[in-house]
Image (cartoon, rainbow, N blue to C red; front, side, top):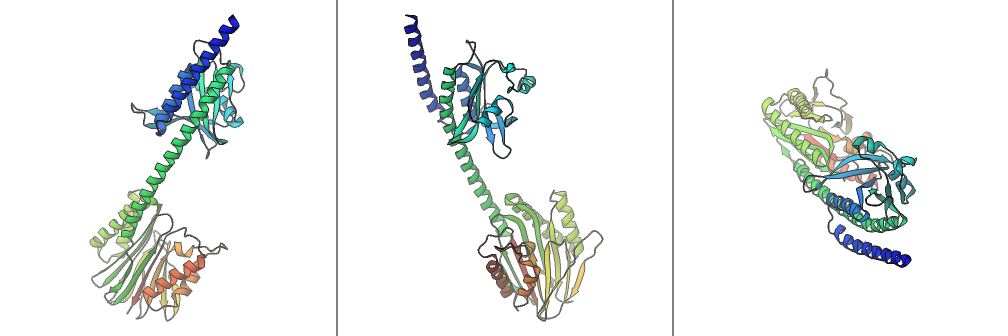
Length: 415
């Protein structure tokens, strides 16, 4: 009679658990929000396993650690990291490393148990049941139920039930991870599109006359949006040339480039033809705005005196082509350096390129190099032809590889 009663109670409990699992499957798959899902899963663990507490760790592939996060606020729509567990550390770390579940009914007698959590929180752990979350053999995380209520210990039946729940939970977690990644990718695409729009406004293709000078400029973006820009203007018989790189990617790079561009324009209005004032103050104001890695070329061509005056931090490469011979104007700015003045002659062509073109590599990992830039520039007599020829030469050299850096080229011919 007792055996039949036991069997009947056992079957009734199994039926009850199966009913719970069906309902739980509906609940945990009702949301794709990671924070809400974590809260639901941990509450359900306590309910279905009848325990005092529960935890869910996600596996961080980058650091090979388990990360415990909790939902914050009334809505529970954000997750905050509380602590990390190294692979193999504690029972959770052991389960993650071994990829198999375990229950321990006297944790302080088990060498695998790490008491640090109890020490930090004041919580007393007596028993743990812990299983891995495995999606197609890949570790996503670990779930734990702690301290059974109204019964002395965890059993094999508890393990079977917990494993069944884990099989459902892992699908919900993976779906939420997929969704979160999709949202992040969409956000990144939106940010990149915004950054490209900002950057495009700072890189108008130019091919026109600035007084007696012929001026051309082109920008060739890399796969990632960077913080490179140029500024060209013609005021009071002077061609103003700025070429800058803030050395940031994405939206921060585009925003910083826009900020520095505004600084340069403002200083040009304040200081007019004072090259050193515009140059030095641009660097100083940029640093005050936490833009620490600014590379800047700033110069002016005075058409009356036929002089080029410039200052350069060294990341840009200024080249003078005269009588078919290219010369690299190797002058870099230091605290004690002064502006450089170069006398120009009719038919001289001044070209400036960013380091992105010099550092391009082909499939043999060979650099395009400054010499090849200079040799290519010598083949052309017009600024637009020179820039187009140089860009085509670079594309041919790269043999179909993608750029790693942005490329900007400016060319000015003295007539």
